[in-house]
Image (tube, rainbow, N blue to C red; front, side, top):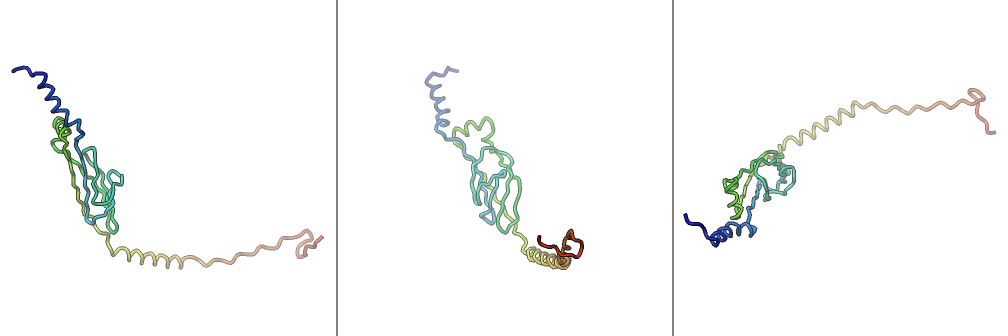
Length: 161
């Protein structure tokens, strides 16, 4: 095997390092959509926006996810961001140099709140209010305090001196 010339080494090193120096790098994003849309999204207890929303991320693994929408039950779940093969150690050097993209798309369906529960709750509150009015006793009149006794004895009027 012939020895590689200096010029060939320089060309090889430029071919490897030039893409990394241009700032290509890998971009990683998570896009969260929901039905209905416009749900508030929390990733790891941090508010990130309303659906549909796309956010950058830096690590693969399990994320805590919470979605809240008006008129729907809140959704709490864990969702895993799985790394593609080219993100594993070894191939990741070439992925970073070539500027790979990792775009994860998560979609969720939110269940509506039951409509029948609200009137039942209001009726129950009215029943409780009526029961409380019946159980509260009438207020007693305020008792008057007896007049203070004077030095002259009981039943005598004080005189101005």
